[in-house]
Image 1 (cartoon, rainbow, N blue to C red):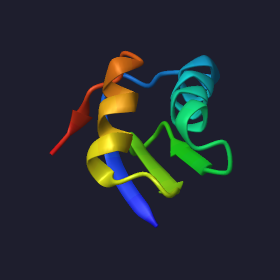
Image 2 (cartoon, one colour):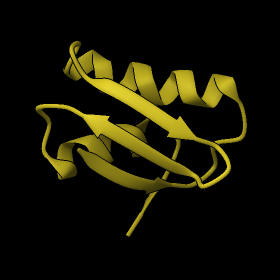
Image 3 (tube, rainbow, N blue to C red):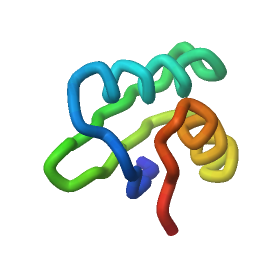
Length: 64
């Protein structure tokens, strides 16, 4: 499992946008986002770099 710290998620729509961004490249990915901790947990075949870039491109910067 990959855990990323993601900035800017404030609602269910944000979670959906992050999920769609990841699943566009890996349809089998499991995405769980937590608004309170601003984290996204992924079960995916994508590399951490790929997942981070997709989420950032969707408008939610991934923090290091």
